Length: 307
Ligand SMILES: Nc1ncnc2c1ncn2[C@@H]1O[C@H](COP(=O)(O)OP(=O)(O)OP(=O)(O)O)[C@@H](O)[C@H]1O
Image 1: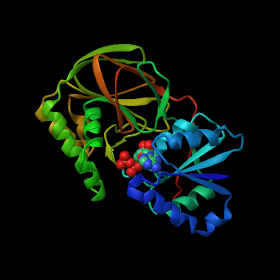
Image 2: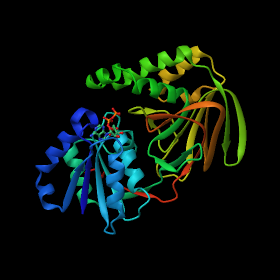
Image 3: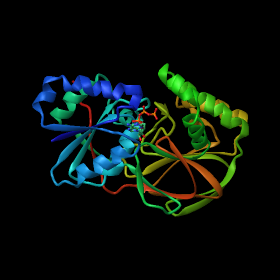
Image 4: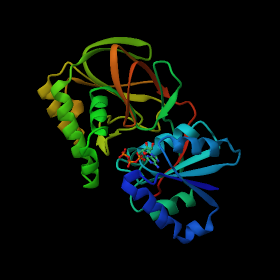
């Protein structure tokens, strides 16, 4: 049984258009399936949880962007009877990219229903201020990157650049706006029980895979298939150097800066006396502390096979 969860708003309607095309294929007519359109933010999680609670094994095919994948995995990710498949239909699609899913949507769909290639992925789990554990599919970041995401998400120009397929420009403008007023802060970081006090910290970002903001490789060593979380720390750096550093992120060269540390761990704690901006898969919030680890239940994700 295949269940489609489609976000009609993702990618300015692209996900919906992809699904309409898939519905016209012979393969779609031959499979046993049902579909749902998400009607509001958070609906994807609710639908996925309801499907996962049924006892039958199912494949949930998400058509949308990272926000929709985030919701579906939070609804269904802890259930072993569920396989997740993704057809990228959003503006970022970093999770799909990390799974090697690319190309024509109809071909990706054919690949899913041929279905011989599922792999176990371990997504990250996090708590904010000791609240309920949730999953993240891409990354969780504290400080500078979270403030940039917050600025970009609430900007009027995001819609314009997304429409022009220039989504990265949104982040460049937001970066410059945040850079002007940003103050580095003291953050306490604990990686597998080893505590550190970072005095002039700009950001800490933990990832399941390298990609960020639609394809930037910010955490180069991170891997979905690993049971460890990769993280980068940026600290003790001048504003001018941050600007240079962030332009090198597009080419994955930022890790050669001495102010950038790349670490790995199983249990990560981040805390601060000051309110910390945090981004989880691009959505932003604030917190004083957070704990991060990999979800012990692996997620079965359909991978794309090359012809
Ligand atoms: N019917 C709906 N109306 C408005 N928002 C919705 C609807 N259904 C889902 N959403 C929300 O849309 C958000 C963005 O979706 P998604 O990330 O899949 O697409 P996107 O085009 O990549 O988005 P973004 O431009 O934010 O990166 C999701 O987080 C979800 O909560």
